[in-house]
Image 1: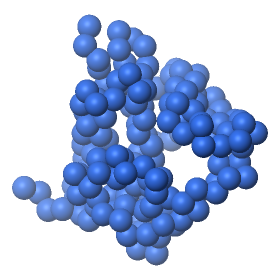
Image 2 (image 1 turned 60 degrees about the horizontal axis):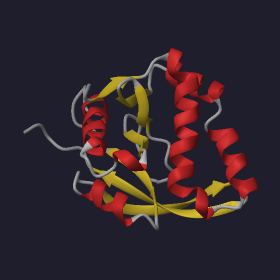
Image 3 (image 1 turned 90 degrees about the vertical axis):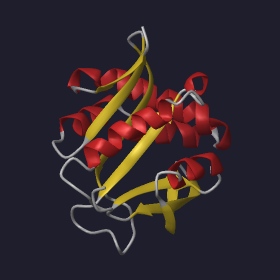
Image 4 (image 1 turned 30 degrees about the horizontal axis):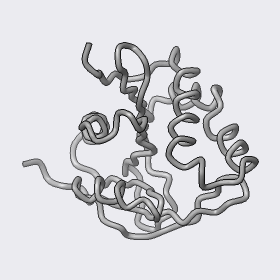
Amino acid sequence: MPVEIRRASLADAATLSALCARTFTETFGHLYPPEDLASFLAGSYAVERQRTILAHPDYAVWLLEDDGVAVGHAAAGPCGLPHPDVAPGDGELKRLYVLRDYQSGGHGGRIMDAVMDWLLRDGPRTLWVGVWSENPGAQRFYARRGFERVGEYDFPVGNTIDLEYILRRPAQPPA
């Protein structure tokens, strides 16, 4: 069975919570003191928080699954990044993570395409994403999709503060 992408539902809240914690820890866990990582994971990826996101009509979450096992996820919704040019109606890729064993196989691009299709379903609009300043691979990934750095902000992980870049993709007219 091929690796598939599907829209997550409320029934996926626990799976999403566990996957979010696993992908964040796999990607960034080595950067933080254990207490900071634990605090962040408990607050950001709790099952109830995932239920709230999954139930919200303005948000969407996708799961990347290999034979029914979740191996990646992405979430999108209204832009909440702290940038003065953010306008009502702007969309944001909130997160996109794929387990290490599934990276570099085109899966990130496939799930990003699903997100972009959803964000642009009603026509062109400005899109945003926040990315860690020390993640050049992700920055290149988003640049290939038309995102450019336009700002930065502090992103707390427990008591640790990371520098995040704000990337924007201006509304593009239909081809």
